[in-house]
Length: 97
Image (cartoon, rainbow, N blue to C red):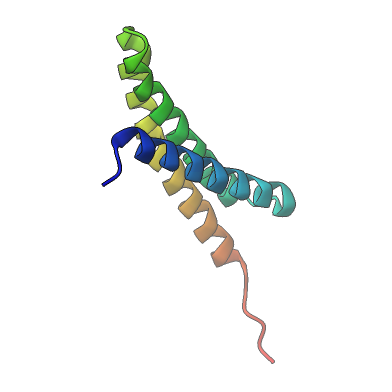
């Protein structure tokens, strides 16, 4: 069994890698869905970091309220990305041969 700090650091690392990949796709293809999905991953990383700061600082405004705000905004950004992706899918018309 892994201990909690290891799981948190692996989650942070994987979300940073996935978020950077999605943001690089956004800069390559200029599709808003990749921007939202990459932002969602990075917002989740910032939420994890601010929630983990509770060990080092005792300031509930940052460690509790800001972390809650970030953890709520991460899935909202993912939903916005799904919505933007579905709008792209609706505008692409299939080619009939």
